[in-house]
Image (cartoon, rainbow, N blue to C red; front, top):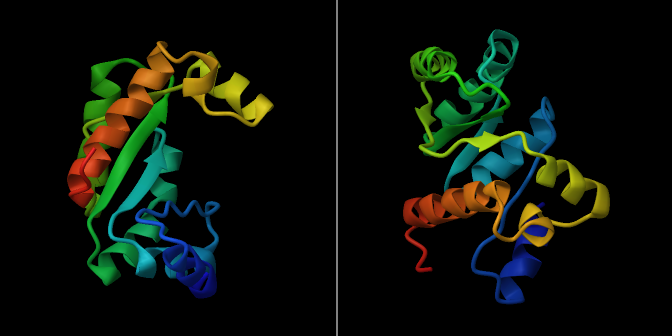
Length: 143
């Protein structure tokens, strides 16, 4: 990863997004060490919240700003409120944007495209756009 990051910087990259698979400890540690902000996607369910505890130790040890981004079909505010309380007790901050499971995401994955390419004016594109605006604010990146 360090060589890839060096190559990207040499090519003029201002922003690099690193996505690691769940439970990939070595990759996650290297990515977290290189990160300015750590985002942890998580469904607001007990098993998923339990699974992110491992990531909590890594992120909190490094002292990086770390946010949970809730993603899933549940729309009930109680579910998200309770999940946010658990994630906060673990030591995470909660991103103010949720990514809901939408057909545009599934279609995009199937076609190797982004949801914004499938439905540019759709709800999935709006959610990703809101996440991007919020993240740019966290990173102090001008839009």
